[in-house]
Image (cartoon, rainbow, N blue to C red; front, top):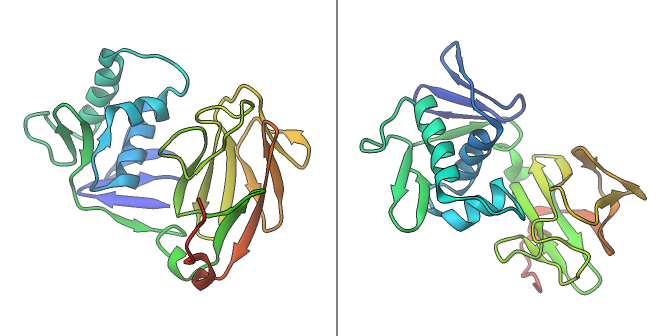
Length: 215
């Protein structure tokens, strides 16, 4: 659950950024932006997707995003004109451009069990890291229901750990009949509900998970 790049270490578990023995404090939005860019590296993440991730279902100005980017750059000791880690793609978005190495359960996940979501009409394979659920095109699964928000919830897969988190949805996320307000671990066979849409988590062998999804 640690990502090392240059002289920096991002600890995903404690949600801290370190430069050697010095903690570089980041606000929640700047930290979430760093995690998103690391997850998608080396691909460019469009500004629209960043705004959907950091401020779901909320309109924010371009200057708000610029402030968060500036905060992250300051913590990484880099200038906009001399990027080491955070590259601006003008007119599109941002990308993580440095070399990074992961350690912990996330890095060892290749030989572990894979996980699938079972819906009424199809099954979807989850990937390591963040899986967004809702009515958003870049999510892992599109749920066509008026009771499901655009970015309704997310599932984090870290090795053999699967955690469901509600993203301030209007109609709630429920596990074993109870509405959740904090990240909630899931195990094989658990059923949860997004609004009125019921979903089941299933653990499978990695070779089984590589079958083509019917999404």
